[in-house]
Image 1: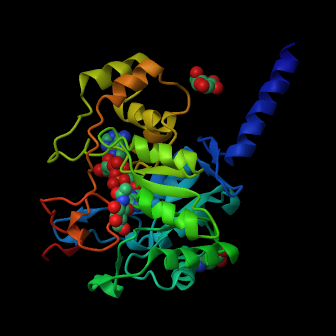
Image 2 (image 1 turned 90 degrees about the vertical axis):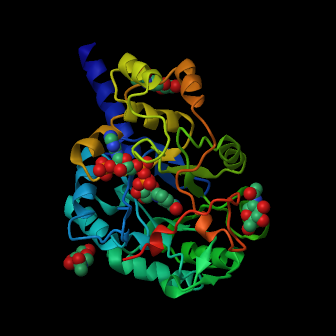
Image 3 (image 1 turned 180 degrees about the vertical axis):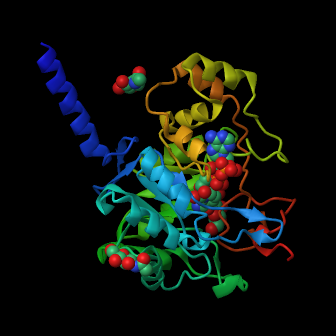
Length: 338
Ligand SMILES: NC(=O)c1ccc[n+]([C@@H]2O[C@H](COP(=O)([O-])OP(=O)(O)OC[C@H]3O[C@@H](n4cnc5c(N)ncnc54)[C@H](OP(=O)(O)O)[C@@H]3O)[C@@H](O)[C@H]2O)c1
Ligand SMILES: *[C@@H]1O[C@H](CO)[C@@H](O)[C@H](O)[C@H]1NC(C)=O
Ligand SMILES: *[C@@H]1O[C@H](CO)[C@@H](O)[C@H](O)[C@H]1NC(C)=O
Ligand SMILES: *[C@@H]1O[C@H](CO)[C@@H](O)[C@H](O)[C@H]1NC(C)=O
């Protein structure tokens, strides 16, 4: 009996390793036959008062190393983040087979007219022969060096994405920061359906309609900024010491951040929390050994305000700006005074 139990347990462990490539997160099927881990690491280092933060040696390589050791198998980057070289180096140094790791990168917003060439540049920086997922970062396009808007029809950009997939340089292709009108246009006119939409989703920005739309169209939603304003002290927000969240966390013997991530996973989206701290990177993936009840889910859902944390209103005069326009235009952090 004990022997049978052992064999079955070993079999189950092996089966789950086979489907997760040794990682902690189970995999979700994509509409093109590939599959994506249910949680990943975000790697954008963000902004300082002076604009986009400079990326110094090790800044992204170390967190990615810790993440791979902790069982992450999905890493999210972008040409914009200026760290693709460090991500490639960390993946190679890990010794984990390349095919067990899911790498996402994105088309530069200021070079949307030559997709294959831009992806080849990313691959050279990553030092890889393919990425698992290539995304159009934004339907809003700029001239090289962000010198003013470029009006590129994203349908033309999508043709380049299809070419990248057909060439095998990207196993799957998708979009980021697109709205449903724009996705409809791609679905109606494209040859290949987007596999993924990456957008902001968190407790403050539920995006239920958009998520439902994507489910109906077979598109997996990746949730960026999964903590929303929770750790931005300057923004009004639900805080990590909120009594409702603390009570749910205590009941499950988990932290509030783990509850937030588990909530998003059970909502059916793929969160990509960013951290550069080892203990937090480990904490953020330790969310696959418990379930929130539907009562917990409903309680957490009541925090939704449909309010964005990552606003892009400074680009709202672009004809393909995807979001509702705002009366109060935010300062553009990409152009902060030096
Ligand atoms: N497609 C797009 O346009 C787009 C836009 C925005 C973001 N993204 C992607 O999504 C990723 C995540 O979004 P994000 O970076 O905006 O925000 P986020 O992941 O929601 O939050 C990151 C912040 O939370 C802190 N944090 C992380 N884990 C924590 C924990 N367990 N306890 C306490 N604090 C914790 C981090 O600090 P420390 O690092 O100091 O731990 C950091 O300040 C990005 O890195 C990027 O890959 C994509
Ligand atoms: C690129 O990867 C290969 C192994 O695939 C390695 O030999 C080479 O040193 C790497 N190049 C850089 C610049 O890291
Ligand atoms: C969570 O729920 C899923 C199905 O809904 C089940 O397969 C899994 O075993 C549960 N996990 C735990 C730790 O209860
Ligand atoms: C999506 O963005 C386009 C701009 O390209 C805009 O005309 C349209 O109204 C937006 N649709 C939704 C649903 O927000």
